[in-house]
Image: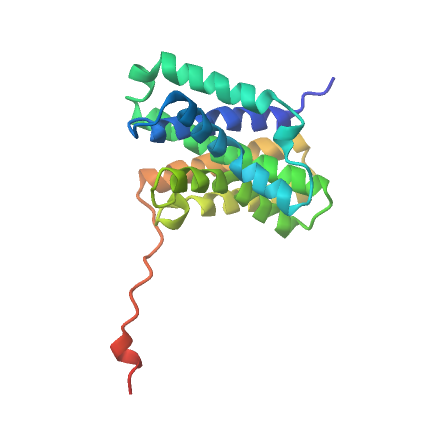
Length: 210
C-alpha cells in the first residue's frame, strides 16, 4: 500500500496546532475541557472553513482520528507541561510545523476537487492560518494573522513552491514534502531575522481637508 503523505501531514499538523493552542491557552484560567476545545478549534478550524467553502462535509465528521490526535496532544501537554511549555522555541516550532502541514493539506485537497491552482493556494493559506485566528479570538488576543509577522505570507510562498513542483512533474510526495519544508523554513527565517511587513500608517484626516 502506497504511503499517503497527505494523511500523515494532516495528522501531524493536527497534533502540532493542538499543542500550540494549548500553549497559548495555558495560564488563561481555562479548565481542561475548555483547553481541549481551544486545541481542537486550533487544529480543525482552518480545514473546516476550507471544506465549507468547497461545499463538502467537514473532514473531521468522517474520521475520529482528529479528535483522538487532539486528545493525545492534550494528554502530552498535561503530562509534560512543566518541560514542554518552558521551551518557547520548541513551542514555536509546533506552530510553524502545523502551518506547513496544513498548507499542504489544503492545497492537495483543493487540487483533488479540480479547483484552479490559484484557488488551491488560497485554500492552503486558509487551512493553515484560520485555526489560529479562531484560537486567538476565543482567547481575546489580536490574531497573529493581523500582526506584522510573516505568517500567512509564508503559507502563500509555500503554495507557489507547490505550483512550481507540480508543473515540473514531481511526484506528489516530493511536492508536498518540499512545500511543507518551505513554509516552515520561511516562517523560521522571518522570526529569526525579524522580517516584518511595514505598518499601515494612520490616515491624517487634516490632509484631506481643503
